[in-house]
Amino acid sequence: MNKLKVSVVMITYGHERYILDAINGVLNQNINFEIELIISNDCSPDATDEIIKNFINNSPKGHMIRYYSQPNNVGVLPNFIHALKMAKGEYVALCEGDDFWIDMNKLTMQVNFLDENLKYVGCFHNTEERYEDSSELASFLMNDFPKAREISFKDLTDANVMATCSVLFRNFDFDTLPSWFKKQRMGDWSLHLLNARNGNFYFLPKVLAVHRLHQGSTWMLQDHKKNLQYVVDTYNCMIASESFSLKQKKLLQRSKRKFTTLHYLTIPIKRFVKSILKL
Image (cartoon, rainbow, N blue to C red):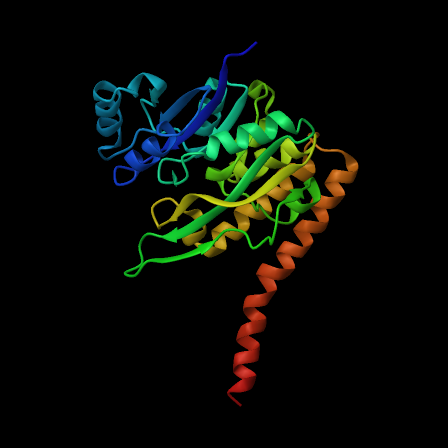
């Protein structure tokens, strides 16, 4: 039996302002099982590497960290895949180096749920989405679900409703990840969809983590047109692959049509309406 219960996978790049919050949020969990924290640093240009090494060498919990520093910048997806393949725990939790957990019972709650509910592939919770670059503290909740609920493959084809730092799922052989996975930009969303082929996720209606939003790492705050294309490209990769059933591909195609209609047509329509109102 695997004594290592949870592998927490943390990828980081340029997170010198945030990495200690991320590490402490993981290692200060109230748990009665064994965990490991896997940190994979994608050749950060700042002091992230120095901060991590200093923590490992000087903290009494430093031994819980398995640290890998990429000698060269490999990119988000290759770094993510590398870290996932290091995971040896029964479960895998995700927390990027600029996010952090705020409830010290988070892992216990999620592990207990999955231990007791074998039909679910994973579970997740609500998060505070916090704008770091705002002059005033600005935040909102990731989900507006009124209560606990299941999230199906169909739900996930429409949108990724799970903040990365909120997810815990059952470990699997990451060597089986399809070749298209590393070619697209939406690593967490597509990973959840691959998982959801085998069962539903479950939403726990508690705010247990903070997902930071800032220009340095939050892709949705960067080039809007490129970001829309990244989503479409990921849909195309999944639809063209052999990873999903015909029924699942039809759901992906339906959601892609909805996405392109909503995001590519609403902006011109809004401009048209504004021009009419000025007449």
